[in-house]
Length: 221
Image (cartoon, helix red, strand yellow):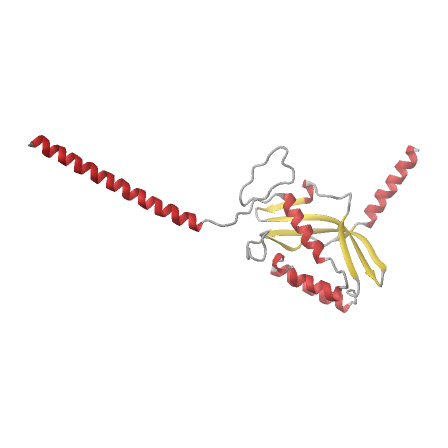
């Protein structure tokens, strides 16, 4: 009898052990289901343009090229006035507001008012990157993990009644910051935050380069 009772007690103890294990497994399963439901539906991963040597990227890490491309695209759109600035500049500020920090949006609105008072918005305007000044690693400076400064060398051309009234080269140093505020409006998760320093004209630099190239060609002949 003692051996039978001992065997039954051992069986009951084993059953309780299995019940406890099943209880822990049930709790782990519930936690896994809740975690899966709370996981984000969209994850932003920046892919560098050149993958020939491979790349390892963190989920929140931003590649400098993508920061540069974002800033250039938004700033080019901001300077695209196909009809005239009185209509298009204001429209672009409103349309692109999701990609601007409130501080920079206010700065652009004040710039609009200043240009309007000075009668500078009766022109059409277009901006494009200088062909000989494309993206390089040196054109993006990382300030912090969430902010960068991108340098754009561009050609700005303004036209009034089919006549070119401005055709200049400008360097824009623009601050780009992480801005995960409204994914429905801004899937990039980035925004322009103003100028790092005052934009500068490059005519003299371009002229000097052209002169040097011309002298080099003449000496080569």
